[in-house]
Image 1 (cartoon, helix red, strand yellow):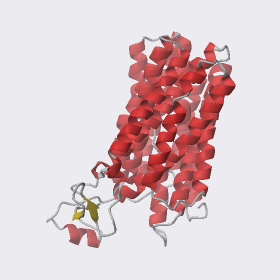
Image 2 (cartoon, rainbow, N blue to C red):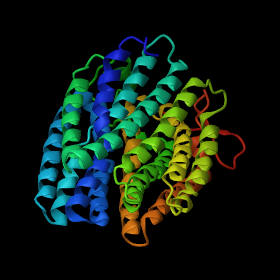
Image 3 (spheres, rainbow, N blue to C red):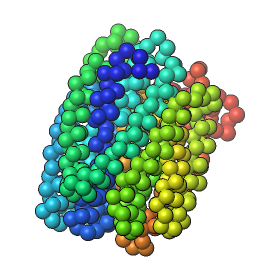
Image 4 (tube, one colour):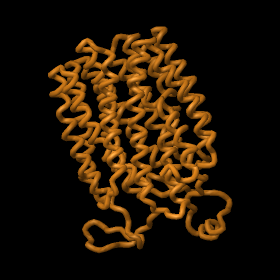
Length: 432
């Protein structure tokens, strides 16, 4: 995979640029909790940043598909670095909660979507190669999941170490510096960036002539990832995965505080992310013969089953037992995450791949934000172990939606036909 021409030029910069994202939520929670003494406020501020990212990420992905990745990255990383500084200064100055929430909006909205952009580059490289259906595409998808999870192994540990061992704002400020440096370096790799897509032209206005010649007056109606029936289903599934991330971060932080070992939170979350990373390696090494849809429908219920035991184990106040179960939860996340990205790559128009991947990344951020808020309130109320109920509830609801709408995950056949429910035979339908 790494021998693919052009791959190495963006793999390392992409890894450096996405590292800060794994530090952001933990850094905000630790800083705001230290300055305010409230997990509820800390979770609300972190959730606001996550919500802003969730709503703005698809917009950024669509702009990247239209104008190119470098044009979107440069202003994003500059705005994000400035917003992080403002949020840190306000928190240390003891600003009121509304001011922290307001500062969290541009902080989250400007997070550069490096992961989706890297995935779009992989898809472009393989589509432009001699074998557009190369099995290395699956390997690249798994590789990106492993890279994401490796950052989530290192990121929370680094954020916790900086915030507890150096200064409460050190984790957040380091996140801003790394985002700025890594984002600028990644944006400089222009040769591997996907070309700006033309999108779809309305019928009857020179569509075939302009597309055939590769020129025209420009797109009047662009292909959108939202037109793919599978995308809303995958968004629901990824929302549940994001809720696991958010609920685990807040709940593990509160659990570590409750047993008198606050520095352990980053280690426990790192163990959880390590399970995801190791499972991603295994998934990437296997040449799967069955359909990706079937793998997702098997992997997601297993995630729900493992998440159901977190609350009970946390009540035992055993860091070893909780770390072991957290490792199992992480192992179950990787197959669902990788398969979801594989389905998105196969079922979404190629001109809208970056947008599709950012919808999924935004769904993870939205789930993380909602879970951070909910877990923070439960921690401040019933107790530290109650926050672990959030991952269970979110994944159970997402799994129900996935099972009910599983028909939408079926790709069209080679003749551009899809099966209409209840008809018993194929019916013609437009397929992107």
